[in-house]
Length: 272
Image (cartoon, rainbow, N blue to C red; front, top):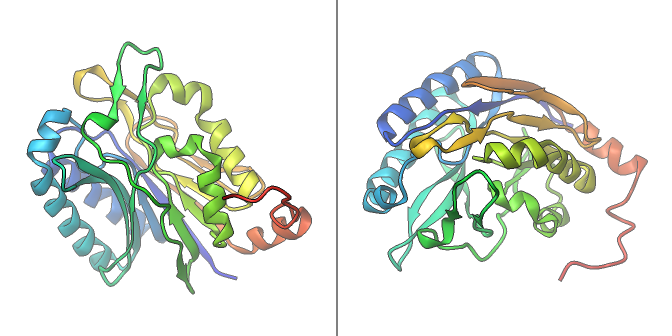
């Protein structure tokens, strides 16, 4: 079974795509030099500013982001899961998109976030993602890699919908990314417990790269990028601040856990 080193990039992104992508490149280089073969970037990694500006600059941000992912994955010979970033839709909104790029600079997965963050969590900010973002309508594909196993992704608020993870587990996903910009207030309450629950329920690795710190208009994100194994153990925690978080991934752990407790085979209630 594959064994390799993975890394998560924890960021404090702002509204300047050039600054953000330069910072991403420096940290991807650090991750690659540290031996990582699979690297995750958080939600809003290339742009984290006003919704109005995001719509106005959506094509520019997308173009710069895709060029960056194509070039940097090739340059450092790594897989990069990056999500989300704006991808213009046909109705004037954007999709919140995650992509997996191979070491050849080829996009292998493209996923549009399904569950949009329309909430009032209690931090003084009203979040209405659906005002500018078009919801996706299907789960991500699972990319089957001989070197790294079976990889897929959700995005941030999707974490609260276990049926989406079960759809990916039904396709034998062994690694599920959760790139996020979790609010500080909800992160403190729910981030760790939900990530560990999704890993335990689906007997897979969960890799959750996160935004950290204070952003435009005082919005605060929680940080604590986590790598969780199929037994629900935390292998790495980014805590606060920009950094690279490493962990060793041994996919034999997935097989062992699924043999110990074959819960996925014992299901009596099908997912429609």
